[in-house]
Image (cartoon, rainbow, N blue to C red):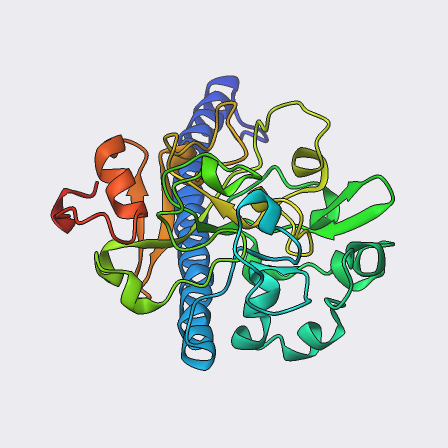
Length: 299
């Protein structure tokens, strides 16, 4: 007898086969996406690290996390670039092919954010794909943060300030990394070796602490020179990417928060597992600690 339709059993078998294929395919697609995100993030950090080297070549020192006048009363050195106010990424703009953007940023007044970030169309709200990790799914729409009437283009990457929690007072920090307020570290001061010293890393916006601070609401912005947290992280705490975490922490959403990608002073870039011991992690974040670091021990 000629049949014009599938039996119920045949339909169920086909549906089961399709379900199995989907179950096999989805993880494979996700792995491809994750790998692509790691590659893009690695390339981003590579460019930033090389820009820092080029900056040193032109200026004989690495850029400050924040270049800002009038901080001597809090123990900080005078600003290396006299009379200017800007952060780490602004200093590096000319060295990763952002000269036109750099030329538009106002830096010669005490509070340039009022000019640079005054609306969604002002220069400080510019978003650069180079400065965003594609694995971070917690950015606000448009990758623009807002704090009051100011608008900031957000970033995923910052410099390493060392092992201390960030403070507005210099004496409360060890200043044993490479970047902090009005710093001007030279390559000769990195006696641990650039291949053993963390320069830049990424951080996650997922599960930021629920505060009303500018750092949490609109922070991690290249145009925000006020907050060191926008420009640096440190190793006073383990890296984090998924759980509730501090603004100072390195971390990412790669591998479900299991690792983060870092750029070293020699321009090399590599992922580091969240399982790294805090001792080794902190040794990597200091520039002149005198510790012996075995690269093979880095997970």
